[in-house]
Image (cartoon, rainbow, N blue to C red; front, side):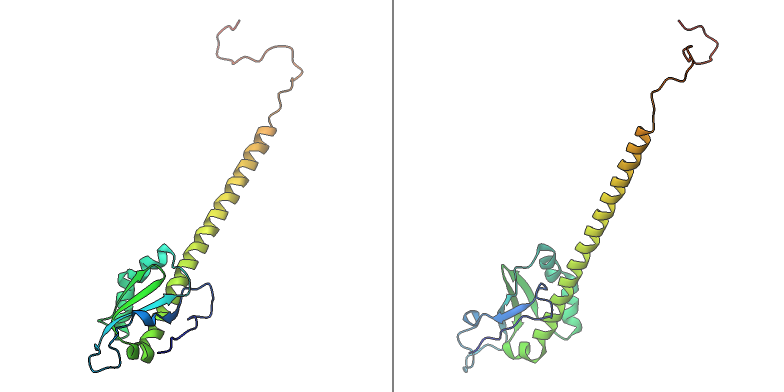
Length: 163
């Protein structure tokens, strides 16, 4: 049996699936004793980030699969493998593989967008703090401890005699 190769999605940095692990398939495939449904393991294009794993295992992925007609399919993550349970190679070939690739691309893009927003907010906070520190420094530098030309000490005019 030949493995399917190639990374899903156009962006090489996006999380995708590369190939099916043929050695993990049931030994009885294509025989009379072959199971109808089984677990297929596919290799990720790279190690998934924790946020990606959380999204893959989340309810949104379950809902996504159900929406596309794969109500009984379950996915789990094991290191660099996506374990796709209650399916078969034909179902994957005929559409499920594309649905999974789209979901992973959406997850990857969502994580990337969230990180970009956080980085922009952090950069804005740094710039704002820099501006504030610059303004404080300028104000502090505007304080001049110079004599006023008067020889009498300046005392508060509170009606008391100061020594």
